[in-house]
Image 1 (cartoon, one colour):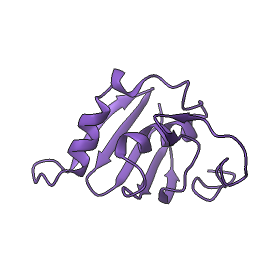
Image 2 (spheres, rainbow, N blue to C red; image 1 turned 120 degrees about the vertical axis):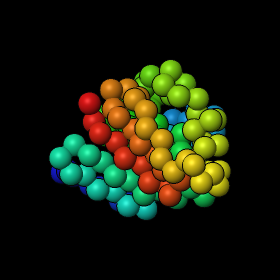
Image 3 (cartoon, helix red, strand yellow; image 1 turned 90 degrees about the horizontal axis):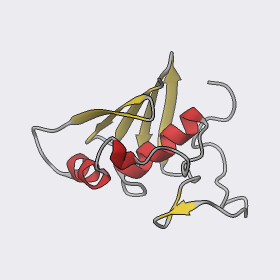
Amino acid sequence: MEGTPIGAEESRTERGEPSETASGWDLTDTAFIDEFEEREGLYRVKYDSGQATPSFAVITIVSKITGIDPLELDPLYDSIDGDVLDALCTADLPSVSRLTFEYTGCEITVGTDDVLEVVAG
């Protein structure tokens, strides 16, 4: 992937610019990303669940990958209930370790290990 890696760029807030928010979250801030790698259309992101919920991470990362403003993306709940996604990914359930679903033309896999994988459509 060319350009500045996600997570290495400054957020609008850090640059003193106004940010776009929804539900109090800064959808342009990628400070919660610990690791980002891209290989042949597969994006793998390790994020800090102390700073971002899984549903927030999905919206932000898909926005960055597709280049679509996060407020212009299809609503996440058209694909999956964000509250359920967050609950499943943060619960200590031995039977659930990964969850895969389609969102905005991408295949999303979220794990209880704070790893998000996106296959761009």
